[in-house]
Image (cartoon, rainbow, N blue to C red):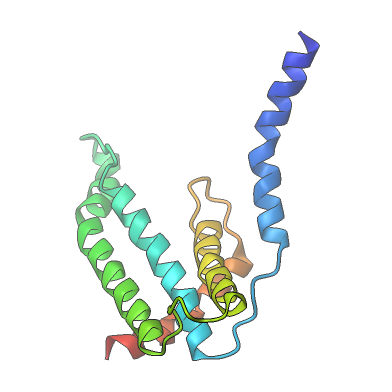
Length: 152
């Protein structure tokens, strides 16, 4: 009985520990515009997924749930806009050859870490529990200017 209880407590604490470990790791430093494009590729990919999930919400008919119905109604267009940004950032990296298989493994691994950092920061800033990681939210601001550049 005690072993089962201890196991249950351990399993309950594991997600919080994993999130704390992810937040404890410093993100890969962004050295140039290509790094910012890779980071924003991860950010926008995660945001597109969030908007896709919003379309599945069950909002009900109560007057207090109007915000939910409004968010759900605007989610398809927001998702498409983020998907377009994902394509544009991927095109920027592809044109420069940064996504080529022939690139050195270290270079590809670094680029993957940067994309993953963007995804992780988005999850940390916009998480379902409402526990905003303000440092992650600040790092997301890097994409504002980069998004304007790729939309031109």
